[in-house]
Image (cartoon, rainbow, N blue to C red; front, side, top):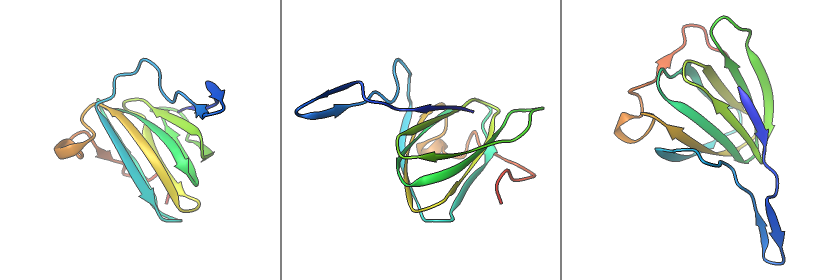
Length: 125
């Protein structure tokens, strides 16, 4: 799990510009609205990589690479999470939240579940 806290790249009298991703190929862009307490994920992808950007609210993220311990962290507005292929991941909304999911691979449209493998033992219950 790689986490980056996005900062301002440019600011003037018109407002602020912040680059979320730089030089990344993205196949799908998705917005997810979560109610407080909602749990999503508890799966991994064999080919797909995902970026999760918190637009609103806060979430607990859990991630685990094969043979390693589970990592957990709370993310708030402006945080970017990166999950690699084969990295198990899950989220729990600590309050109502709005997430931007940027995906490279088969994780979208008609192929939404094509590269999704549920975990036998959830990271977050």
